[in-house]
Length: 256
Image (cartoon, rainbow, N blue to C red; front, side):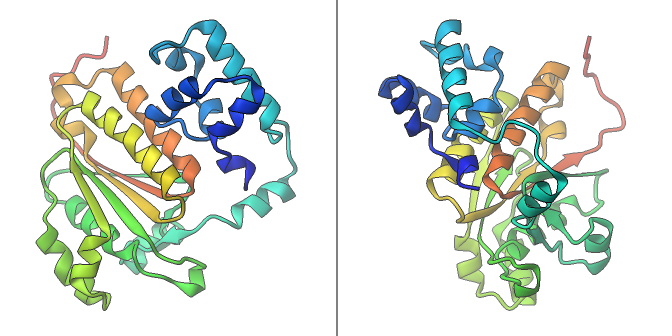
Protein backbone atom coordinates (compact mmCIF):
# COMPACT_ATOMS: atom_id res chain seq x y z
CA UNK A 1 0.00 0.00 0.00
CA UNK A 2 1.03 3.64 -0.40
CA UNK A 3 1.03 4.17 3.37
CA UNK A 4 3.39 1.25 3.81
CA UNK A 5 6.03 2.91 1.64
CA UNK A 6 5.55 6.53 2.72
CA UNK A 7 8.87 8.36 2.66
CA UNK A 8 10.20 9.79 5.93
CA UNK A 9 10.39 13.16 4.17
CA UNK A 10 6.73 13.68 5.15
CA UNK A 11 7.95 14.07 8.75
CA UNK A 12 8.87 17.65 7.84
CA UNK A 13 5.15 18.43 7.96
CA UNK A 14 5.16 17.40 11.62
CA UNK A 15 8.07 19.51 12.83
CA UNK A 16 10.95 17.09 12.20
CA UNK A 17 13.91 18.92 10.67
CA UNK A 18 15.70 17.87 7.49
CA UNK A 19 18.94 17.04 9.31
CA UNK A 20 17.20 14.47 11.50
CA UNK A 21 15.43 12.96 8.51
CA UNK A 22 18.80 12.55 6.79
CA UNK A 23 20.08 10.74 9.88
CA UNK A 24 17.13 8.35 9.70
CA UNK A 25 17.90 7.60 6.07
CA UNK A 26 21.59 7.10 6.83
CA UNK A 27 20.71 4.06 8.96
CA UNK A 28 18.26 2.64 6.46
CA UNK A 29 15.09 4.11 7.97
CA UNK A 30 13.61 5.53 4.78
CA UNK A 31 9.89 4.91 5.35
CA UNK A 32 7.37 5.73 8.06
CA UNK A 33 6.64 2.05 8.58
CA UNK A 34 10.36 1.38 8.93
CA UNK A 35 10.58 3.91 11.77
CA UNK A 36 7.58 2.32 13.46
CA UNK A 37 9.23 -1.11 13.21
CA UNK A 38 12.37 0.17 14.95
CA UNK A 39 12.51 0.23 18.75
CA UNK A 40 13.13 3.41 20.72
CA UNK A 41 16.17 1.76 22.25
CA UNK A 42 17.66 1.32 18.79
CA UNK A 43 16.77 4.82 17.62
CA UNK A 44 18.40 6.61 20.55
CA UNK A 45 21.68 5.07 19.38
CA UNK A 46 21.51 7.28 16.28
CA UNK A 47 23.96 10.14 16.74
CA UNK A 48 22.20 13.28 17.96
CA UNK A 49 18.93 11.51 18.84
CA UNK A 50 17.71 12.04 22.39
CA UNK A 51 14.80 10.14 23.94
CA UNK A 52 12.64 13.25 23.56
CA UNK A 53 13.50 13.54 19.87
CA UNK A 54 12.76 9.86 19.28
CA UNK A 55 9.41 10.21 21.05
CA UNK A 56 8.55 13.18 18.83
CA UNK A 57 9.41 11.22 15.69
CA UNK A 58 7.45 8.19 16.88
CA UNK A 59 4.43 10.35 17.68
CA UNK A 60 4.56 11.92 14.22
CA UNK A 61 4.71 8.50 12.57
CA UNK A 62 1.65 7.38 14.51
CA UNK A 63 -0.27 10.39 13.19
CA UNK A 64 0.85 9.73 9.63
CA UNK A 65 0.22 5.99 9.51
CA UNK A 66 -3.45 5.11 9.80
CA UNK A 67 -3.16 1.31 9.59
CA UNK A 68 -2.03 0.74 13.17
CA UNK A 69 -5.40 -0.52 14.41
CA UNK A 70 -7.06 -3.89 13.96
CA UNK A 71 -8.18 -4.82 10.46
CA UNK A 72 -10.46 -7.57 9.21
CA UNK A 73 -9.31 -10.87 7.76
CA UNK A 74 -10.75 -9.71 4.44
CA UNK A 75 -8.44 -6.68 4.50
CA UNK A 76 -5.47 -8.91 5.29
CA UNK A 77 -6.43 -11.13 2.36
CA UNK A 78 -6.50 -8.07 0.10
CA UNK A 79 -3.00 -7.08 1.20
CA UNK A 80 -1.80 -10.65 0.63
CA UNK A 81 -2.67 -10.30 -3.05
CA UNK A 82 0.56 -8.31 -3.43
CA UNK A 83 2.68 -11.22 -2.17
CA UNK A 84 4.68 -13.06 -4.83
CA UNK A 85 6.82 -16.19 -4.75
CA UNK A 86 10.11 -16.98 -6.45
CA UNK A 87 10.70 -20.52 -7.66
CA UNK A 88 13.70 -22.40 -6.25
CA UNK A 89 14.17 -24.20 -9.56
CA UNK A 90 12.98 -27.44 -7.95
CA UNK A 91 9.32 -28.43 -8.19
CA UNK A 92 9.61 -30.60 -5.08
CA UNK A 93 11.23 -27.87 -2.98
CA UNK A 94 8.68 -25.34 -4.23
CA UNK A 95 5.97 -27.73 -3.09
CA UNK A 96 7.48 -27.94 0.40
CA UNK A 97 7.66 -24.14 0.58
CA UNK A 98 4.10 -23.71 -0.64
CA UNK A 99 5.10 -22.36 -4.03
CA UNK A 100 8.60 -20.96 -3.52
CA UNK A 101 10.40 -18.18 -1.65
CA UNK A 102 7.72 -15.76 -0.44
CA UNK A 103 7.97 -11.97 -0.55
CA UNK A 104 7.55 -9.80 2.56
CA UNK A 105 8.91 -12.72 4.58
CA UNK A 106 12.21 -14.29 5.58
CA UNK A 107 12.98 -17.80 4.33
CA UNK A 108 15.77 -19.58 6.22
CA UNK A 109 17.58 -22.65 4.91
CA UNK A 110 19.79 -24.73 7.19
CA UNK A 111 22.20 -27.48 6.25
CA UNK A 112 25.49 -29.15 6.97
CA UNK A 113 28.53 -28.96 4.72
CA UNK A 114 27.90 -30.10 1.13
CA UNK A 115 24.10 -30.24 1.32
CA UNK A 116 23.44 -27.83 -1.55
CA UNK A 117 23.14 -24.50 0.27
CA UNK A 118 25.48 -22.65 -2.09
CA UNK A 119 23.79 -24.17 -5.13
CA UNK A 120 20.39 -23.04 -3.80
CA UNK A 121 21.62 -19.49 -3.26
CA UNK A 122 23.11 -19.33 -6.76
CA UNK A 123 19.97 -20.80 -8.33
CA UNK A 124 17.74 -18.27 -6.54
CA UNK A 125 19.96 -15.49 -7.88
CA UNK A 126 18.87 -16.55 -11.37
CA UNK A 127 15.27 -17.65 -10.81
CA UNK A 128 14.50 -14.32 -9.12
CA UNK A 129 15.09 -12.70 -12.51
CA UNK A 130 12.52 -14.86 -14.31
CA UNK A 131 9.13 -13.27 -14.99
CA UNK A 132 6.23 -15.63 -14.39
CA UNK A 133 2.76 -14.55 -15.46
CA UNK A 134 1.14 -17.55 -13.77
CA UNK A 135 2.57 -16.35 -10.44
CA UNK A 136 1.93 -12.69 -11.17
CA UNK A 137 5.66 -12.05 -10.86
CA UNK A 138 7.61 -9.66 -13.07
CA UNK A 139 11.17 -10.67 -12.18
CA UNK A 140 13.89 -8.36 -10.88
CA UNK A 141 17.41 -7.85 -9.59
CA UNK A 142 19.17 -9.59 -6.70
CA UNK A 143 21.49 -8.55 -3.86
CA UNK A 144 23.86 -11.26 -2.64
CA UNK A 145 25.54 -10.73 0.76
CA UNK A 146 28.32 -13.29 1.23
CA UNK A 147 30.09 -13.96 4.52
CA UNK A 148 31.58 -17.29 3.38
CA UNK A 149 33.33 -16.20 0.16
CA UNK A 150 31.53 -19.02 -1.65
CA UNK A 151 29.90 -16.91 -4.36
CA UNK A 152 31.17 -17.80 -7.83
CA UNK A 153 29.78 -15.87 -10.83
CA UNK A 154 30.82 -18.69 -13.17
CA UNK A 155 28.30 -20.93 -11.41
CA UNK A 156 25.52 -18.59 -12.49
CA UNK A 157 26.18 -19.09 -16.20
CA UNK A 158 24.96 -22.70 -16.57
CA UNK A 159 21.97 -21.92 -14.35
CA UNK A 160 21.10 -18.96 -16.57
CA UNK A 161 21.41 -21.21 -19.63
CA UNK A 162 19.04 -23.72 -18.03
CA UNK A 163 16.39 -21.01 -17.76
CA UNK A 164 17.14 -19.50 -21.18
CA UNK A 165 18.62 -16.28 -19.82
CA UNK A 166 21.51 -14.46 -21.48
CA UNK A 167 24.34 -15.06 -19.02
CA UNK A 168 25.99 -11.63 -19.12
CA UNK A 169 22.65 -9.94 -18.56
CA UNK A 170 21.91 -12.32 -15.69
CA UNK A 171 25.23 -11.50 -14.01
CA UNK A 172 24.62 -7.76 -14.39
CA UNK A 173 21.37 -8.18 -12.44
CA UNK A 174 23.13 -9.56 -9.35
CA UNK A 175 24.76 -7.08 -6.96
CA UNK A 176 27.38 -8.80 -4.80
CA UNK A 177 29.04 -7.74 -1.57
CA UNK A 178 31.37 -9.50 0.87
CA UNK A 179 30.87 -9.12 4.60
CA UNK A 180 33.60 -9.84 7.14
CA UNK A 181 31.92 -9.71 10.55
CA UNK A 182 28.50 -9.25 12.13
CA UNK A 183 28.93 -5.49 12.64
CA UNK A 184 29.89 -5.05 9.00
CA UNK A 185 26.92 -7.17 7.98
CA UNK A 186 24.49 -4.97 9.92
CA UNK A 187 25.96 -1.85 8.30
CA UNK A 188 25.52 -3.43 4.87
CA UNK A 189 21.91 -4.32 5.64
CA UNK A 190 21.25 -0.65 6.44
CA UNK A 191 22.65 0.18 3.01
CA UNK A 192 20.49 -2.52 1.42
CA UNK A 193 17.37 -1.05 3.03
CA UNK A 194 18.26 2.35 1.57
CA UNK A 195 18.87 0.82 -1.85
CA UNK A 196 15.55 -1.01 -1.80
CA UNK A 197 13.83 2.27 -0.99
CA UNK A 198 15.65 4.32 -3.63
CA UNK A 199 15.00 1.75 -6.35
CA UNK A 200 11.61 0.48 -5.23
CA UNK A 201 10.37 -2.49 -7.23
CA UNK A 202 13.71 -3.13 -8.95
CA UNK A 203 15.18 -5.58 -6.45
CA UNK A 204 13.21 -8.74 -5.75
CA UNK A 205 15.55 -10.88 -3.66
CA UNK A 206 18.16 -10.56 -0.93
CA UNK A 207 20.37 -13.61 -0.45
CA UNK A 208 22.47 -13.69 2.71
CA UNK A 209 24.96 -16.55 2.88
CA UNK A 210 25.67 -17.34 5.67
CA UNK A 211 25.75 -15.76 9.11
CA UNK A 212 26.64 -18.57 11.48
CA UNK A 213 29.77 -20.16 10.11
CA UNK A 214 31.89 -17.13 9.30
CA UNK A 215 30.94 -15.18 12.39
CA UNK A 216 30.60 -17.98 14.91
CA UNK A 217 33.36 -16.73 17.22
CA UNK A 218 31.54 -13.45 17.79
CA UNK A 219 27.95 -14.67 17.51
CA UNK A 220 26.38 -13.81 20.83
CA UNK A 221 22.69 -14.12 21.44
CA UNK A 222 22.03 -10.37 21.46
CA UNK A 223 23.97 -9.87 18.24
CA UNK A 224 22.00 -12.62 16.50
CA UNK A 225 18.71 -11.01 17.53
CA UNK A 226 19.95 -7.63 16.31
CA UNK A 227 20.78 -9.01 12.86
CA UNK A 228 17.37 -10.65 12.64
CA UNK A 229 15.82 -7.24 13.34
CA UNK A 230 17.83 -5.81 10.45
CA UNK A 231 16.49 -8.52 8.13
CA UNK A 232 12.99 -7.83 9.40
CA UNK A 233 13.41 -4.15 8.59
CA UNK A 234 14.06 -5.05 4.95
CA UNK A 235 10.93 -7.23 4.63
CA UNK A 236 8.76 -4.10 4.44
CA UNK A 237 9.95 -3.46 0.87
CA UNK A 238 7.99 -6.38 -0.52
CA UNK A 239 11.06 -8.38 -1.55
CA UNK A 240 12.08 -11.96 -0.78
CA UNK A 241 14.81 -12.74 1.74
CA UNK A 242 16.66 -16.04 1.67
CA UNK A 243 19.08 -16.53 4.55
CA UNK A 244 21.32 -19.58 4.18
CA UNK A 245 22.88 -20.95 7.38
CA UNK A 246 25.78 -23.35 7.85
CA UNK A 247 24.98 -25.89 10.57
CA UNK A 248 27.95 -26.43 12.88
CA UNK A 249 28.08 -29.61 14.95
CA UNK A 250 30.27 -28.16 17.68
CA UNK A 251 30.72 -24.56 18.73
CA UNK A 252 32.79 -22.56 21.17
CA UNK A 253 30.08 -19.91 21.36
CA UNK A 254 28.93 -18.88 24.79
CA UNK A 255 25.56 -17.16 25.04
CA UNK A 256 25.43 -16.45 28.76
